[in-house]
Length: 332
Ligand SMILES: [Fe+2]
Ligand SMILES: [Fe+2]
Image (cartoon, rainbow, N blue to C red; front, side, top):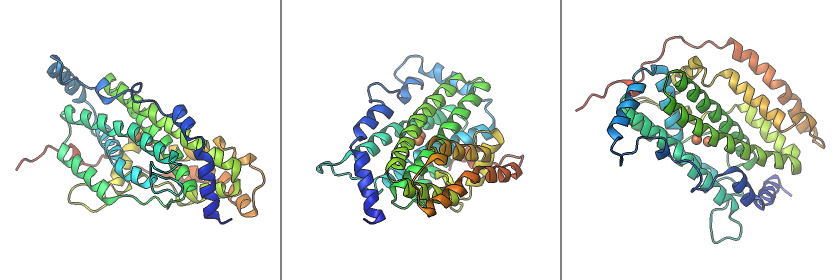
């Protein structure tokens, strides 16, 4: 059987459990939090007072912190890109009329949960009074227009490595933003970001579980896909971030530097996540590997130590970039 057909077979095998995965890792609509649980209620008499309080707390938030929050928001708002990418993965079928449509259901319900992240953050930023929303909207619009290229193709194995990694990275960064918001005295913003982080953790656990099951049935190919993704590096979804009038990707480095300066997401975190995945999938204990996969394992086991040396040497500029997102809007 060709590699392609084996992957389809494995996806069908996993699909028989998709309903259980949905129950285990996703939360029904009626039970899960919604953005309005954490934002001022516009139907309430106290709405304007609540907004005033929100703006008072937002006044003292540092620029780097706000820039990271904006970048995270925009990354979440580019969700149409991620959904359309996941729906194109080999073995994901979307037609409801087909007998097997479990993967389509998974992707839709995952998207439903993710959609609340950009929603709550965008509303918070709008109310905060600190943000040039038109600039933010243009960046989000550009990011969706630009799409992304993360090097997974339509391969489910590579895709699940990417999502396992990326969900853990977003968990970490939302959690750190939550901790910082608390430190700056904004407990409500802190609570919002913590809720988002908890969703990201469940999603990470789900995708990591899919990979774990694939390791049980197709270890060599799964390992080669993991190796491939680690060698080419995980490209962040915000890689093409840009400001209005600038070229694609021109803003990503500034955003990434802000995140590093604050300790929200650093090069060391990248290496830690890689190590966590290696441990979680028990890469050292896999058996029955082909020669090629054995070589990939040797390489992977040594990679975190090698990369942490590079991470230690990284120098992040001390001065923050002047983001258009944080400049007052010039009205025409
Ligand atoms: Fe998210
Ligand atoms: Fe996520």
